[in-house]
Image (tube, rainbow, N blue to C red):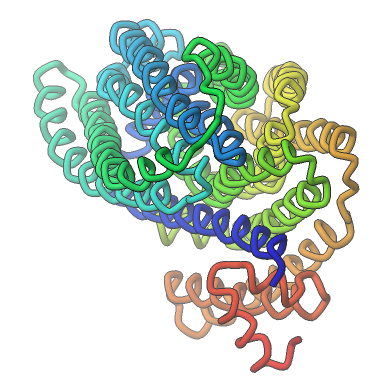
Length: 550
């Protein structure tokens, strides 16, 4: 195997490791949201989701962009064997993270009441205050993860992510159960038992986030301590390298972080914008507080949790691609840059499209199985929400790819334009078409689609790469539709035979996995070499050979 092919395999394997870790984390997150939702209810989910909306926005400005920026700067210096400069990037980033994370923590803690009142959900204030110190911890963890990602290893980040989510899951459920009961007793005294129970239960959920972040921080500090000896040996071998000043490193860090912050902030501002627009317009349209809270609880606690599972894979692939693409781009290795962009895009498409079709076909059974929610309105919400999955997956990935080829401002401009169009479209669906919660979901599809178009146009322009549309999107879509037909039939037949939604749903999912794999291979939507680069790729190839598919 040539060095180039080894590097390509390493890049995809590292990306796949991170993607699998993100998928595992999301699945753990989905599992614990089931008992959490049953404890705090749809109203509690509304409070929990609103607190997270504010937390995420502040996190974006203070901490979210740090791993990507650090990995990009460290990768560029490691590629040139500038180990001392890479260490200085790490130290400078740590100072930056403590300052910005600390400021974010103070703003959220003392401004929690203002934020939640503005979003018409004042009962989520306690949950938001608990999330305040998490912002500082996430900033520090981000530097540590970014450092290792810059060294082209995703394993520390992947393991820490899983540890974080396990701790989050356990503490969230236990704390929510305890605090929900306490809130019921407080509410009984104050005259509103249900509201206070839901608010305190939501606070228990955010305590899990605090515990998970603390566990991740301890783990990453431990790993960094172990790696110090290895890095010091590299420093001793370094010769005749110009050492950068901390001033120049801070400037490089800020110039890298600001475009990432802006693009990510604008890209994710959709969550706080949709909350504000929907809740205010729905209130003016005389929908009851309970109805609005129920809709928003289903949206944030059920629909978003499910659709974010495949989107997290795109985020992981984007995070893993940026350092590698930056290194290849700085070396002017156009062939390698092209391969990385096309491979990452194909990988995401192969994952996102069957997830979309599967959630649409099994919307009602999945919600019954996971959340014991037989409501047809919830199922329709999931169907509409699932339509945004491929668009958000591709746009998330292309954000990272554009940053990797040093076109940092393009995602900012694209996200800003798409956000303005989204706001207008959302107001139109709510005010003119009176689509209530469906207006939010349809507008989200529109926003993701606009981001895809704008980002892809920019990527084609600056990388000069033409993606094979038929192989990348059409073939996986055909295989997904075939899969969807078999999934529907499998569910219906098994349900007739067993009258069990749980058995029928799990059977249909297995049918879907099997039929999608056969379909995508038979119509040549994936090659043997591409399969080998996936996690457990050799096993997939052996399985395909046994079925005589290759």
